[in-house]
Amino acid sequence: MKKNKISKNWIKRQHRDIYVREAQIQGYRSRSAFKLIEIDKKYKIFSNKKTFLDIGSTPGGWSQVANNKIKNGKILSIDINEMQPIKNVKFILGDFTDEEIKKKVINFFESKIDLIVSDMAQNTTGNKNLDSLITGELCLDVLNFTKNIIKKNGIFISKIFMGSNFKEIITTSKNIFKDVKIYKPHSSRKESKENYIICKNLK
Image (cartoon, rainbow, N blue to C red; front, side, top):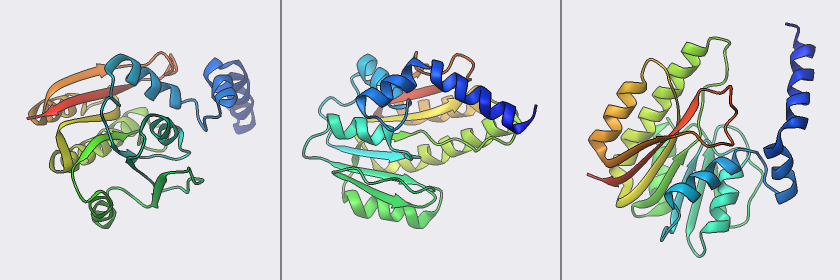
């Protein structure tokens, strides 16, 4: 399929997408904001939470949701792509897998974190299995960081795909957290294989 035809199909889909329209109405930068809103509605993730780390944040939809939910707290967003400023949100431009970026996270919060979310995903290569595998590796990297910096009653959320390392992600999560759930928000596109892992209560 030619590139211009793919672009036209993408534009048509955007026009039909109720979450794209609703994001524009409510002032969210991306339709993905509604994924976090749904997760919060089901799992009450923002209850009594004051510190929030958003990994893979750009364009900033999840950080906007957090900013609406958390008052007088600390919110940090990280992405390899620039993000337009959001009031009360600190942004770091960089690759989270870089150890120097992780040190900046630790220095910013100065204590353990209530809520860590990751919407990172591999840029599509055309090979869905490879994309899924790399996205899973990103999730595992964040998990290994999370276990040392999240509060005992903290919550970790990450995008995952049903790929070859799916079972490894679940096993690793259950070794770190007491309560592990898999959830696909209604606002995720039907054709997407994405799910979100919700982990609560550090072991």
